[in-house]
Image 1 (cartoon, one colour):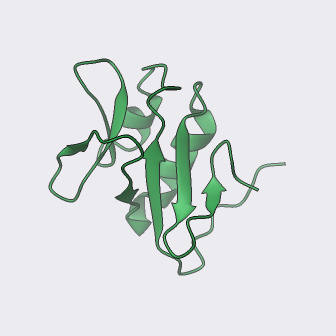
Image 2 (image 1 turned 90 degrees about the vertical axis):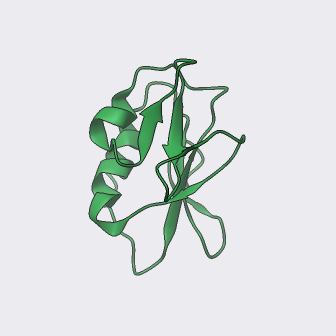
Length: 99
């Protein structure tokens, strides 16, 4: 059963575990405003200034208009490396560790 995409007014952030990234680029196809492949062939999230956040575990806020695309990226990622969590308590709501 597919989970519903909800934000419930909560701010969400997304990060990528590069150790698991397969470099398929599905995330960048779904949400190029949020994800980008770097020269190393791995995906990274982008900061507000469009800079790639390359520090391990670095997270970027999920703009509400892009929530569905970001969640679809997490669901479709073959490496299961995209994590979407609430900013308030850092609980993962979409991704491999979501409850």
